[in-house]
Amino acid sequence: MSPHRYALIATTERATGETLSRLVTARGLETVVLRDGDAAVALLRERGVPALTIVDLALPRVDGFGVIRALRALAPAATAPVVAVSSNLALRTRAMDLRHSLGIGAVLSMQLTVPRIDQLITQLFTCVVPSVTTGLWTSPTQPPVTDEAPAADPAREVARERERDLRQLVMNASPSPVLQAQVSALARLFGVSSVLVSLVTRDRQFFKAYHGIVGQLLAERGTPSDLAVCRHVVEDDRPAALIVPNAFESPEFASHPLVVSGLIGSFVGVPIVSPTGMVLGTLCVIDEGMWLGSAQMVDALQIEARAVAMVLCGERLRARQLARGSQAVPVSPAVPVCRMIPRPAVARRSTRPNAVHSPLARPA
Image (cartoon, rainbow, N blue to C red):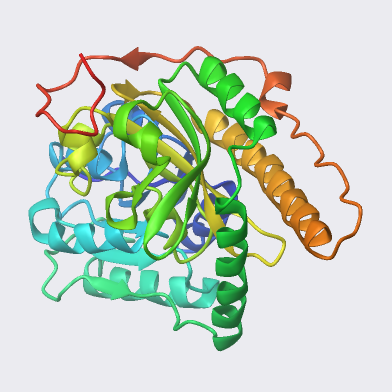
């Protein structure tokens, strides 16, 4: 099958899609930008093999790895080059591990500057797709292009220390009634089993608000950080959603204890960002089966996360005022803005592989 003269760009982030589209269009290709993996797979079936595919590894409905597998069912790497992009180091590392079996030509961080991304795409065209304008293709002979995020800024490290103090402050408090009401409303709206406001430190994640957890998770209101899927959002190069529509088939998360136990079948975590720009934790939507929510629902969840950040900052101010002996101002309620958005139809697949018993799993 010969490549069609278009480029497929699949990313949930609108700004990223627009930037990549401009860079690829400048090389003479029509670009199609889609925001979920299911639509990307459908386009492959409808239009055939793209001249170039740039795919975010975290996509709704079908993740980036699933999109690449669908492409490889149609064409090999020699005729269908792929660039994998992600803000998440764990996903990029997994893509590098699978680069040969999936034919991934480049793995890029979303933290890179636009000129650097342009340079790396040019390098890919030179090394992997030397005849992009003629439609002639050769197999890659060099290792895949990869480029990590810039080294941490010392000023950001100082800010991170300040945010760590904030986390300890809010963790000592009881569950927030305002946030409890918000996560319960979100669980009903999104049709999922659990919603959490998870605050993450180096050693532990703590559930500031929760809906749908039981057993040990409820008793401890958290987990060790090495068991926390949410820490992947906190550790991202920059604030971005982590979307795992089918954890059972995810190369990165299928072996996670909470997935093996059957407690997590899908996960969408969006960052809770402080006014200083640091990620405190996540607002996460979890279900025991596959969750096929749309990119628009991820957008709505990100708006909700901003409301959560406002509540947390209000609680910090109140605690400081009490510590100084001042009269504390009341905490402003969060506005669950998703109620203002018409509820989309969410198809959820509840079937899952046989779960292995875990003390963290729900009781039968």
